Image 1: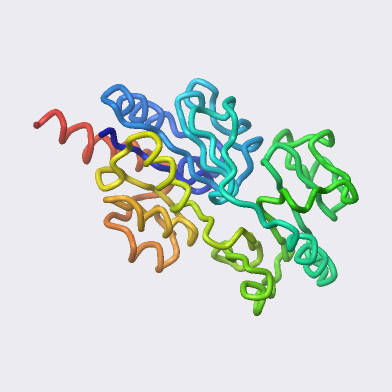
Image 2: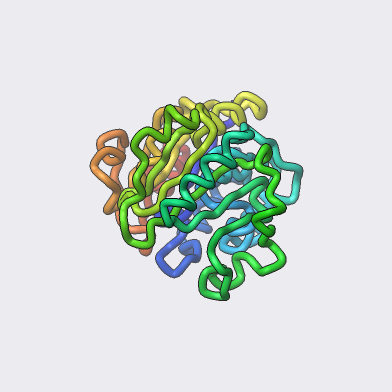
Amino acid sequence: MKRALVFDLDGTLLTSEKSVHRETVRSLFDCMKIGFALVIATSRPIRAVEHFVARDLLERAAAITLNGAVTYERGPYSGPTFNGTLGARSEALAERLRSMGYYLSIETEGRRFASNRRQTLDTLRGQQATHADVINWNDIDFNRVSKIAADGEGSSVEVDGYADEFEVDILPEMSGTFVNFLPRGVDKGTALAVYADRNGVDLAGSIAFGDDLPDIRLFDRVGTGVAMEGSPPELASAAQHVIGSCDGPSIGSFLEAEVLEALRRD
């Protein structure tokens, strides 16, 4: 069975400048040459993954997006697999969150989305999305919603009672000011397990890299979890290794020492 290298995107595979470090790229291609599969597992939609990761790398990768709600098993240009939707309850959840004053991003398959925020170039974050990607709120098919992201604009998002009332899993970023609502039982780890079963991947021999709380679900599924510098204590304690910043060659150095050099010795 083949093994996989699994990466969260922001703060892990991407530097603070939103690029992949050249040493990381070199080591990734060396690992793929010896049979490792590459998997990107992120809370972001596929349109953002395509924007940040170079095509020559991305077309070799599987992509688990929206924190596990949608998977692309053979590059983002293949058809998506939907791992669950919020269903009809998503409309009531969105209305409740909107009434609380939060800014929302309501995702379906990750290429188009709806929001209650007036979309400007700043809120669209450059070229990650265009106005053509935005669905009118009244045109949302709430039965197909894969994820709702609530932004507290610097204040913590109130989530008490939401999990049971709307049958969702709640995945906050470490600050609690940005919260993802997903179908219950859908997360990066469950999506990775389905991908691995379909593609003959040995997760016990695989390595996952992450920097935030949702990545604990990845670490639970693989043989080796690697936390980035500055990760929250809960993630660091779930990891077998803690390495340096995403802005340096820490991922490339780890792969060279723990994977490539070990194979050369063998």
